[in-house]
Structure formats: structure tokens, C-alpha cells
Length: 73
Image (tube, rainbow, N blue to C red):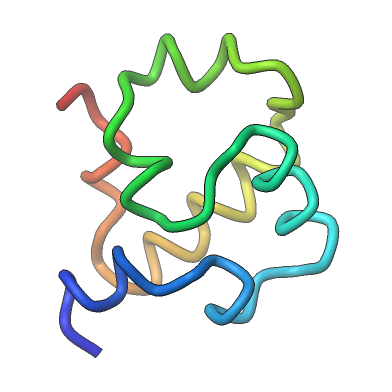
């Protein structure tokens, strides 16, 4: 899957845990593009954010070689 396609695929179709998907929904994230298009500060301050969620996201992006997408846009 190409990067653009991956970023636009619904999060619940990417193999994340149910808990991760629920937290994304509570933060109004439907795709990885939604998550990576805001600053790290905005992400940390979103209601529903927690570090377990961030760990799952970071691990996924790292495996895909895309961890840099969490840096400041």
C-alpha cells in the first residue's frame, strides 16, 4: 500500500486494536491523515489522548517507516 493510500484508509481497516479505534473515533480521527496533520502539541492536548494510544500509533508508523509523520508539520 502506498503512503497516500495508507494515510487515506479508514483507521478501522488498518489492523489497529478495537481500543485504539474507539479512541480515534472519540478524537474525531477517521484516517491517519487526520492524526498526522495536526501538531504534536495539538495531538497531546486532544480530549481522549493517552500514551498507550500513542504507543500503538508510534509502533504502527515505525513498522511502516512513517514515524517521522508525527513530527511537527
